[in-house]
Length: 255
Image (cartoon, rainbow, N blue to C red):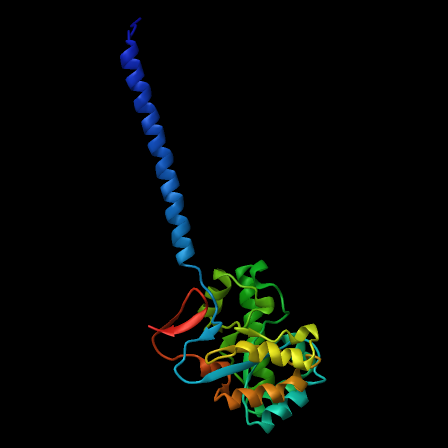
């Protein structure tokens, strides 16, 4: 048997070295975690909420997922002011109102995807997200003879996976920078105040096709925007062409 005799000083040095090595290992793990977290944060994707445009333009959009009693009135108001907008349609709405969906296109408005069944997209598998978008696009094509290019996630619910899958199918993901909150049945005056309080060039406004007082609020909002020199266009017309990017705040900018 071989017996190693180690002095107290030597043993102390060995223990210090072991502690240093262990500490270095922990530090490396912390640094690695920090790097991964930083890269992940840098790669976070966001939809387009607003556009940094040089022209004085804004976009008005309507989400359609329930009801239609006030949609014809909204379309008539838009015609009166020669304003074109964007309607994001859900399949369950199109199936109930196919003629009205087709009329929206006939009146010159843009159509965007709003999914097949209006789910929380972040809770779905990749295959189900793709199915929601493909089936939505197919019904819009069959009903309206229109090929959409824009997509708005229901409930504003998105993550990197949702945006990446939409991009892979050729759709640009859109949110909004001004929320009318018309779905809360605010009065027309309250809707007008919310929208006009901070609206400026590049904003995307969210309305709903069947908001209780949306149609009542629209004329004053349109007239005031026009008075301020803000041209109202569909979302697709507001977006930038060419080499551009969307910053962390959701503003689309030229590179």
